Amino acid sequence: MDSLALQGDEVHIQKGSLAELLQTCYNADMKEKMLKLYHGSSVAVRKPKLIETGKALDFSTAFYTTDSRKCAYDRAMQSWQLLKDFDRKLCFVSEYCLDEDTVTVKRFEGATEEWFDTLVDARSSGFRSDYDVLVGPIADAFVKRILQDFCLFRDGYLSRGGHDDDLEYRSEKMKALGQLRPKREYDFEQYALTTQWAVDRLEYKCCHAFSQGGIYLKTIPLGEKLNIFELEDLATYRKKKQHKDDMWYGR
Image (tube, rainbow, N blue to C red):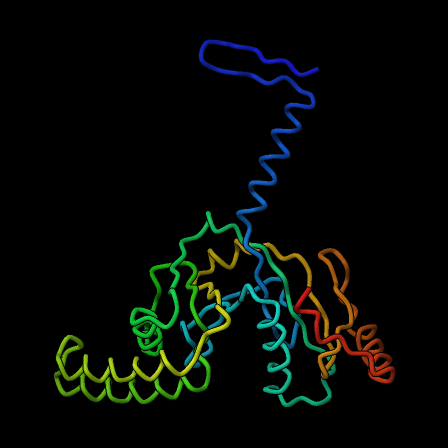
């Protein structure tokens, strides 16, 4: 039976069901703080790393994830198409947990001016975020065209001695922002892990394997070996059976 021992101002709980209950409550509280994130790719990413790509990405160099299974599934399908490697039969959604208390997070609540400024700055060389994780809408092709046009204006304007607080500069930026807000609702958010510290805080859980046509094949948990040949055989079998599970991301 549990007992409480009072020593001065301290309370000591002896081993037993009460201590176990408190531990269970603590574990449940920690679980609630854990954020579940997904990364869609042509490969399973068990140990992500920050890699300089030189591409004009939303938040520059980062490991990009999302809290949406649907978004990660779409990215996995897109990764196969972008590779144009039609011999490759598989793509993956890797699943992680992240304790937000261990990292600094900046959230952009929609297509705000601050979000737009960060996207513009991220297209400049030497951009570094002050936060471990940036959370905000994903810039699609429409947004990227607006960004490209504005960045061309900005580079030319600043090179001529202008400043970003000038009336002309502000007017051009407000025009660009005006195109964004009424045109699109942003259904998904991305979590861009901009530091290796944040990437190292990710806890890999499992990966979900899919065939080219989006057919769900199998979930491979942590500790189980990823057998590519087995998955490719499974993809061939399910293709013949015309087995399709489009709603994996809705589970």
